[in-house]
Image (cartoon, rainbow, N blue to C red; front, side):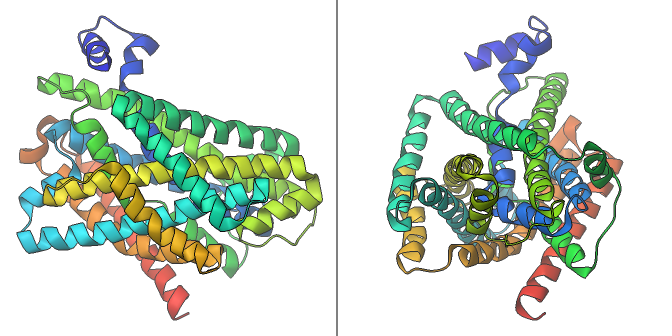
Length: 418
């Protein structure tokens, strides 16, 4: 159905929104990684401590994410292969095995943050013990993944619905918070800092922009979705997918900005403290300051974020294994394997916020192994053909890659040696 509609769009038989519709979806799945529970704490902290000052960092980080995800989508369209598959073909066997192992570790770290985030959401909303909330989360994610048996569209639809829940929740809370529009615009478009603390937090926001697992996944989502028969068709497909990226990542950027705006308006602007970087603190701060209804809406958004991003993490794990070593295991078995560390962490009573921080540190180690090969491959004319990067694109991508990796190294230094 999707393939026929896409073919009609390429042949000019469908135009406008009808022509674009068959190509929407991959970037919406990828965008989930940019509004996962790991983003909640950073944006909440930025709003409470610095008001609207760091909104421009959220905007900048989102633009960087758009470029990286567009390159990943383009690799799949141009080659008909995903990033791990191209790595397997271009690198030695030992290097490929190493890249697979580190990618699996990154996938587990990602899953830890997302799974715990969803469990915290259930715990906060319903008061259910955290371990039981974790079991409920596992069941819900299994149900989401079961939709893949009916094709990719049901999965995309379910994840899009969860993203819609997040968008509606934060749209309501922004409306409720009544932020100062002038200050919002100033914060979003005028770069500035407010002391060394804001510089460090800005570093965290940008440094955690790119998620390695979703770079691998996005190329897989586009590699065989619509196959271009000619160079011109490949260019058209990429233009459609670029629109998909801009819309999906634009929505993710608005959600991240909304988190910061809400806490800037409700706490920083009103001189209220008491909210730390933990998600639980944000929930309880909203409950005590604005009422349980507002807090529950925040919790529902957190739950939707955790469920959708955890599903995406499992999908990425499948792509990583199949691409690097040509092996597949049943997706439900993978889900069971990846969920175990999260349940163990919860059962041992480890502080959830600390576990989230550790997971982000592990993620930072995986960024070069996804980002550098992506830039090298998309700049190779023999591999990419008509979709090879333009010089300006390559320069921008290299600058972004160096910036992201440098900031992650800085964060690691501050975390362990600072």
